[in-house]
Image 1 (tube, rainbow, N blue to C red):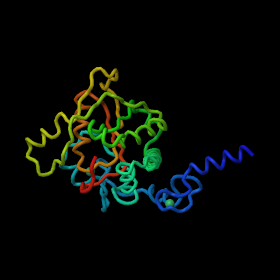
Image 2 (cartoon, rainbow, N blue to C red):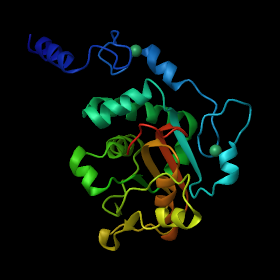
Image 3 (cartoon, protein in one colour):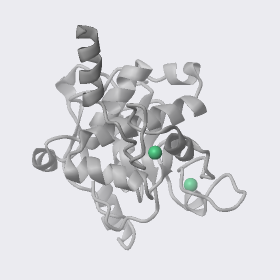
Image 4 (cartoon, rainbow, N blue to C red):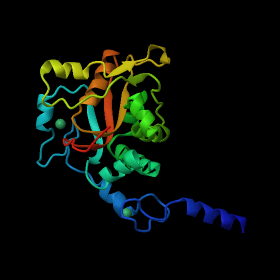
Length: 246
Ligand SMILES: [Zn+2]
Ligand SMILES: [Zn+2]
């Protein structure tokens, strides 16, 4: 009798519907059909993860831009349902959407990388938010996803080591001098954090990567501190930065 009640209580707490299509999902966050659709492999640039239409390995951007990460892995493009789930997490404080995004990102990561490749990483680092933005939102959406990855992949977090000084703005349209200023000092390293970056391989986690300017600026600091390999995991990768705010 008690067990029966407990089971009913647990079922009440779990969503009865898929967060994407609202159909019954057997008390899972997503139904089998939507999960399969999101995880279907797409064509993307092997270096920066931009969507590609043709049969090429790399996009035109990667030939021109000097990215400092080894490569980006994205769960998908910035379009529905991923864009919707990201907005629900960031602007409507629906943390359950973050749980689902983390679950899907982990599934796509373990389908691309072997256990051995993942175990080569020393730290997971969520792209820090500016303290003012963190205070306004109450949480860092990238950190929520990063925490789940840390638990599931058994990789420690790089915490309290990097802070954000300012928001980076899109690089396009800026002069070379302004581009350099925009990228410099966007993040700082805290000497007394007790965590060492020299020679470490780091997985950087972000929700949406658009121009790559913010990620590159963070990578510059990590490289200045002699980090070894840097791979970026993000939910969505897109060249369009309209209506997307960190
Ligand atoms: Zn569904
Ligand atoms: Zn590319």
